[in-house]
Amino acid sequence: NVLKVRRAYHNRTGSPVNPENIRQNDLIVVSVTISTTDNSNIENVAITDILPAGFEIENSRLNVERETNVNLVKSVPDYVDIRDDRISFFTTAAGTSKTFTYMVRAVSRGTFKLGPIGADAMYNGQYYSYSGAGKVVIK
Image 1 (cartoon, rainbow, N blue to C red):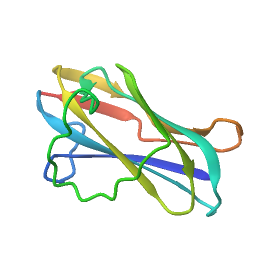
Image 2: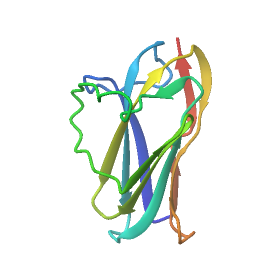
Image 3: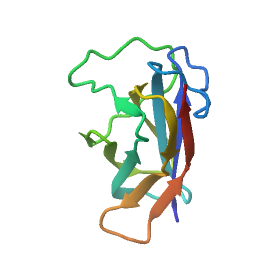
Image 4: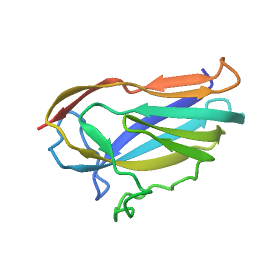
Protein backbone atom coordinates (compact mmCIF):
# COMPACT_ATOMS: atom_id res chain seq x y z
CA ASN A 1 0.00 0.00 0.00
CA VAL A 2 1.73 3.16 -1.36
CA LEU A 3 5.23 1.66 -0.83
CA LYS A 4 6.90 -0.64 -3.38
CA VAL A 5 9.89 -2.74 -2.31
CA ARG A 6 11.64 -5.31 -4.51
CA ARG A 7 14.68 -7.59 -4.14
CA ALA A 8 16.93 -8.95 -6.89
CA TYR A 9 19.95 -11.27 -6.89
CA HIS A 10 23.04 -10.76 -9.09
CA ASN A 11 26.44 -12.37 -9.35
CA ARG A 12 29.62 -10.30 -9.08
CA THR A 13 29.58 -9.55 -12.82
CA GLY A 14 26.04 -8.18 -12.67
CA SER A 15 24.16 -11.08 -14.27
CA PRO A 16 20.85 -12.06 -12.63
CA VAL A 17 20.98 -15.12 -10.37
CA ASN A 18 18.17 -17.66 -10.14
CA PRO A 19 17.60 -18.29 -6.40
CA GLU A 20 16.72 -21.90 -7.18
CA ASN A 21 20.11 -22.58 -8.80
CA ILE A 22 22.90 -21.40 -6.48
CA ARG A 23 26.14 -23.23 -5.78
CA GLN A 24 27.66 -23.52 -2.33
CA ASN A 25 30.22 -20.74 -1.65
CA ASP A 26 28.75 -18.42 -4.33
CA LEU A 27 28.95 -14.72 -3.49
CA ILE A 28 25.69 -12.98 -4.38
CA VAL A 29 24.93 -9.26 -4.61
CA VAL A 30 21.45 -8.49 -3.30
CA SER A 31 19.84 -5.27 -4.49
CA VAL A 32 16.86 -3.83 -2.63
CA THR A 33 14.81 -1.11 -4.33
CA ILE A 34 12.23 1.11 -2.59
CA SER A 35 9.91 3.76 -3.98
CA THR A 36 6.40 5.13 -3.49
CA THR A 37 3.63 4.49 -5.99
CA ASP A 38 2.09 7.96 -5.64
CA ASN A 39 5.33 10.04 -5.71
CA SER A 40 4.90 11.08 -2.07
CA ASN A 41 7.65 11.15 0.55
CA ILE A 42 7.28 8.73 3.45
CA GLU A 43 9.76 9.16 6.28
CA ASN A 44 11.01 6.50 8.70
CA VAL A 45 10.58 3.46 6.47
CA ALA A 46 12.11 0.20 7.74
CA ILE A 47 13.05 -2.34 5.04
CA THR A 48 13.74 -5.81 6.44
CA ASP A 49 15.16 -8.72 4.46
CA ILE A 50 15.18 -11.98 6.44
CA LEU A 51 17.70 -14.37 4.93
CA PRO A 52 17.08 -18.03 4.18
CA ALA A 53 19.07 -20.40 6.40
CA GLY A 54 21.66 -21.20 3.68
CA PHE A 55 22.85 -17.58 3.33
CA GLU A 56 25.27 -15.60 5.46
CA ILE A 57 25.72 -11.82 5.16
CA GLU A 58 29.17 -10.62 4.14
CA ASN A 59 29.47 -7.95 6.80
CA SER A 60 31.03 -4.93 5.09
CA ARG A 61 32.03 -3.60 8.53
CA LEU A 62 34.28 -6.63 9.03
CA ASN A 63 35.36 -7.36 5.45
CA VAL A 64 36.47 -4.87 2.83
CA GLU A 65 33.71 -4.65 0.23
CA ARG A 66 34.57 -6.89 -2.68
CA GLU A 67 34.87 -5.75 -6.27
CA THR A 68 31.69 -6.16 -8.28
CA ASN A 69 30.61 -5.12 -11.74
CA VAL A 70 26.99 -4.64 -10.76
CA ASN A 71 26.01 -1.31 -12.28
CA LEU A 72 23.49 -0.14 -9.74
CA VAL A 73 23.21 3.39 -8.44
CA LYS A 74 23.67 2.78 -4.75
CA SER A 75 21.76 4.94 -2.31
CA VAL A 76 22.87 5.59 1.24
CA PRO A 77 20.35 4.62 3.92
CA ASP A 78 19.86 6.64 7.09
CA TYR A 79 20.85 3.58 9.12
CA VAL A 80 21.67 -0.11 8.53
CA ASP A 81 21.16 -2.88 11.09
CA ILE A 82 22.97 -6.16 10.32
CA ARG A 83 22.04 -9.28 12.26
CA ASP A 84 22.88 -12.97 11.74
CA ASP A 85 19.57 -13.71 10.02
CA ARG A 86 18.49 -10.38 8.55
CA ILE A 87 19.46 -6.94 7.35
CA SER A 88 17.37 -3.81 7.86
CA PHE A 89 17.67 -0.49 6.06
CA PHE A 90 16.04 2.68 7.42
CA THR A 91 15.30 5.45 4.95
CA THR A 92 12.80 7.93 3.51
CA ALA A 93 10.88 6.53 0.54
CA ALA A 94 10.06 8.84 -2.37
CA GLY A 95 8.75 8.71 -5.92
CA THR A 96 12.26 8.16 -7.26
CA SER A 97 13.70 4.72 -6.55
CA LYS A 98 16.45 4.17 -4.02
CA THR A 99 18.60 1.05 -4.30
CA PHE A 100 20.57 -0.48 -1.45
CA THR A 101 22.96 -3.38 -1.95
CA TYR A 102 24.63 -5.96 0.24
CA MET A 103 26.38 -9.27 -0.30
CA VAL A 104 25.56 -12.77 0.92
CA ARG A 105 27.46 -16.02 0.67
CA ALA A 106 25.75 -19.38 0.08
CA VAL A 107 27.19 -21.42 2.95
CA SER A 108 24.97 -24.51 3.33
CA ARG A 109 23.61 -26.94 0.76
CA GLY A 110 19.89 -27.60 0.72
CA THR A 111 16.48 -26.18 -0.06
CA PHE A 112 15.44 -23.23 2.10
CA LYS A 113 12.37 -21.01 2.45
CA LEU A 114 12.83 -17.47 1.13
CA GLY A 115 10.60 -15.06 3.00
CA PRO A 116 9.28 -11.88 1.45
CA ILE A 117 11.17 -8.65 1.79
CA GLY A 118 9.13 -6.10 3.70
CA ALA A 119 8.96 -2.33 3.96
CA ASP A 120 6.90 -0.64 6.66
CA ALA A 121 6.48 2.99 7.66
CA MET A 122 7.45 2.82 11.32
CA TYR A 123 4.95 5.42 12.53
CA ASN A 124 2.11 4.97 10.04
CA GLY A 125 0.69 1.46 9.62
CA GLN A 126 -1.16 2.25 6.40
CA TYR A 127 2.09 2.34 4.36
CA TYR A 128 3.70 -1.06 3.66
CA SER A 129 4.91 -3.44 0.94
CA TYR A 130 5.88 -7.12 0.88
CA SER A 131 7.32 -8.99 -2.09
CA GLY A 132 9.35 -11.96 -3.26
CA ALA A 133 8.58 -15.07 -1.18
CA GLY A 134 9.78 -18.39 -2.59
CA LYS A 135 12.62 -20.82 -2.10
CA VAL A 136 16.40 -20.95 -2.41
CA VAL A 137 18.19 -24.07 -3.60
CA ILE A 138 21.93 -24.30 -2.86
CA LYS A 139 23.77 -27.17 -4.55
